[in-house]
Image 1 (cartoon, protein in one colour):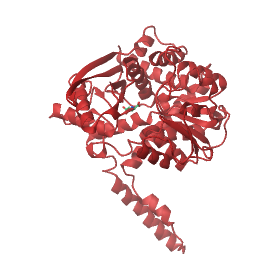
Image 2 (cartoon, helix red, strand yellow):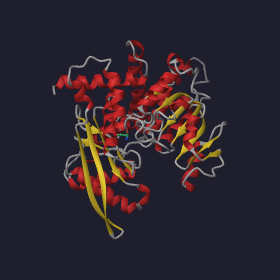
Image 3 (spheres, rainbow, N blue to C red):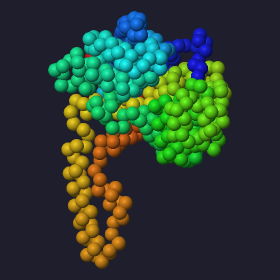
Image 4 (cartoon, helix red, strand yellow):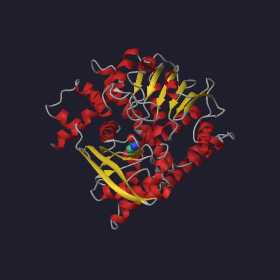
Length: 479
Ligand code: GLU
């Protein structure tokens, strides 16, 4: 999958700044505060050696802290060969704006390790991860109250469990040790619903967008999500869950999936689950009978569709291909998939872009719930679930009695009874909290979009909401 050709447009870091500058132009911030918000506070680079396969291998890693207006700072750790300082800083900045937009009480941070995770065995990856974590923990760049990483591209529950354990070994008496990282497996202090949280957030974001016909009309679309043609780029954790939920629960038709080794096209709709199974078994989409194989998968982004979901990496929609994109709506499930120049071209074409800092905020939102769970040392719902059920039972019994007394033997339906009687477990509470977060954040963006002069797009509106919140936080506490 090709990113923006090198040298033809601003880099990722500058691209994020260009986007935030567009918002700043609409704000009346005190001199100097704008710069304070924009710059990255610090980036730590570490080079460490690990003895593997009889040789010493040196790895380069980063942890960048963009803004500490709230602490801990928050953001994932990425494993990829493309990781570099500029990328990590751009991603850290996005975390600041994202957390502010969805009101998770964190500053922004991001980490990365320059590595191809597929090139190493599991035990080797564990040693590399623990060594990287050691370097960050000893500088408080992993810490429950200072800096809390999470999964990102190339990492997942497994890596987070190693990091949590490494921290615990180095802080044996810290009762809050588990809160030093989120995205852990359930058995290791994680929370139900975190794995699919970002994809679920993309679904909730789209549902909320489609609740506003006025906003939908701006893209030239109408109606509901039902029957909408979707193209997804990247069937990793985020793309897979978003595509699965949208097709299985909202009636969307996933007509194309673009992957690393090629893509699949099927105007009648692809079975996301089967494609995922095929990739797991064969290492790529080639040969998958679900759709027509397309070697140059970047071309699939240019197919006509209603909703395009870039869910892989930054810069895949750039100055060179933006004009050929024919999607009515782009929802940025990845961070930075549309460059600043492409954004301009697409805006002129009337394409509505649901921006990354909102669209993929489901991950950090559920990370927030996990962090709170770790600090409170109790599963959500444990205290109230059965009490809630007992109160509902009382009401149902009373209704039954009244209905019977009135001579109506056809009482409450079984399905109502079942749904009403069951108290919410952790997963349901997480979903409800995520849904509420995505709805509230959308409404704060759309209010700016519709009520302030000269705001053309959701991205600028999102940045305005975020930057105002960060600025308020600096104002109240003083610099
Ligand atoms: N890596 C994810 C992101 O880019 C999640 C961050 C987190 O949960 O802290 O938003």
